[in-house]
Image (cartoon, rainbow, N blue to C red; front, side):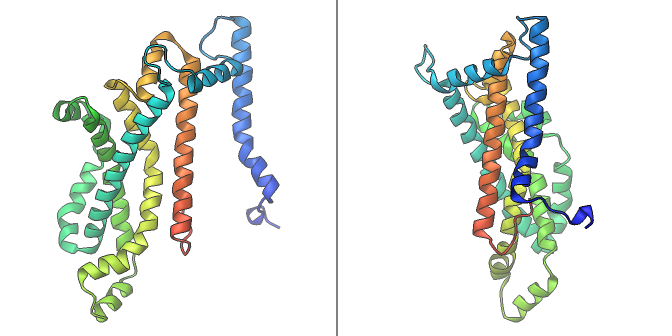
Length: 270
């Protein structure tokens, strides 16, 4: 049997999935041990035990000044900003993606404009957003939405264009109006793609969130990372980085499960 046709059994699949993570953990532990052996005061690569102790403290001990557990407070603030920004971007992308893909006049008007806008580096707009919207929540949310929306619009518009034209013709033959075609023919076929597009844009959305919080915020995961970096508190930074990665993985997994349950007729592509 050719290698391309071989598929791992369930135990082997689990082992192969865990292998890269174990390899990275081992490599880090070895590198940390080497640096700490040369300099016990080294802060660049704290020992895994130190990171674990720090994580336990961050997740359980309240701040002496406020009485709150700062990590949970930062997590709630960041997730709120992420949810609103990504949600707004998804709604706008769905609306404009359907209009651009379905209506030739709208496609001629907005297609090239969206393509050009998608080339603008979102982080370059951050100072402008701070000037226009101030340093509060709105500028951070708008940065996330602006950062992910243009690419999602292009993706969804192309998905609409990829719908077989025969389906549109048949719907018109049966007397369906343009709104009915959009709701009954187009929308069910692009909703799975919308979820996939959101999953693909989660990485950039986190990047824009962390960048905005690092520049101007009083609470948030990105704010905390950049606050403690001046003290070279790598154990705290690594704890936050691992926590952000875990949150991103859980959100991605939840969206994948949502796609599978809501659209069982169509495998989630990613």
